[in-house]
Length: 459
Ligand code: BES
Ligand code: ZN
Ligand code: ZN
Image (cartoon, rainbow, N blue to C red; front, top):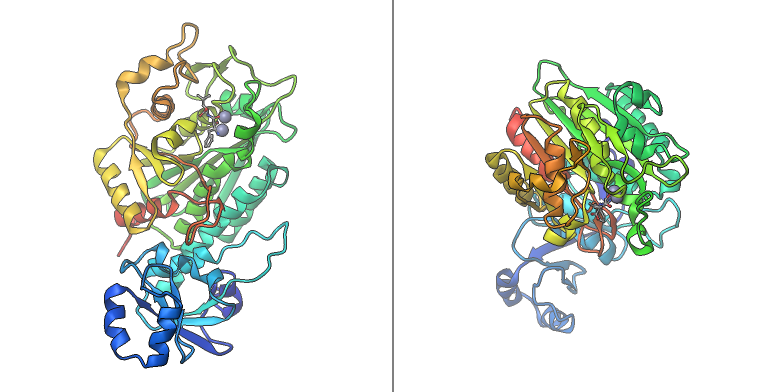
């Protein structure tokens, strides 16, 4: 991090030097509380009772010395400090206990505010922490999460494919990465008939952005993200309630970009290919229709059963293009199906993986990062559900059973035998939790970075 100053850190809820009086706090679980109470004077004992402090995670108690106790579940994770930045009165704080990187990430993620359109009542409290590698790494993870959250939270009107392209180019410039863009009718010339079909009805043309970074001698990792800047459903229009949150349908693209930034920031020794297909799934006279048959980049023909199953259409061309770079691994992120949400809910990232060991490693990496990931089956026998009489495959199965699996099986045709990890995610916190404010969320991003670092990292 080139700018590691208080001014830069304040956005993430940190300072390395206290400007004003600092309140210290200690983390106490129920066991520690018992021994601590013995040494307290009567006034403090009474104060604890008055504040009903039992050491439960998230509780706060003030002592007469003006110092602070924070209830703790005994585990290091996002939970520990995640609710404090806005729960504690405005000011500077420091922690007496040794904090881990994940605790610092918790504080930083809990300090997030989306204030582009509304002034917020208060700023987060500031945690004063020593200038360490640990803090730097935490800030890198927080920064990438903020980037993804901001992109997701920004309404479609200000996050068109052109807007997303601008942000991507800015980021690429920062890290001297190369960018190329295939836009509008040029997509047809490049064979990307599926991306073109999804986006052609919108005023802002669809596109595929490619970012290339890192030493070519390193293993090539392709990262792909679904970038539907608004999903109306197309001619198979969504009912109002289902359409309401569809500004977030570029969440996969936002997370791919955030992950790319983490990789570049930390100089992970890989050769990175970031592929971001962007389109608005809109309705007009030239919209693609049920029954249309698309020519994809892979040469596979796709019959459209439902224009609302558009994410897999964007992804299939991008995945197929990525094969040209002979990646050792392909990873994609997508807000792909409602079925994945029915299966694992909104707070777990559903994951499909062609390799069982990788799947286990991802789950373990996610656990270590408080970023839960759960595998779902790539069950080949369900392929029959995607059969079409007039094309190689249909884009949506008639029944809806195993909907997340059939979507994944559709995509699998476009990656050949390349090892592949596919995330079907919510990319949105539907309720506020510690370190996870309501709104856009980089689900699966830290899990995947940790997985990649364990596999490719130097240390
Ligand atoms: N973007 C949606 C999926 C979605 C909805 C993700 C809500 C997260 C929350 C996607 O494009 C879609 O509409 N999928 C359809 C597929 C169906 C038509 C096969 C779905 O899940 O209903
Ligand atoms: Zn859709
Ligand atoms: Zn969608």
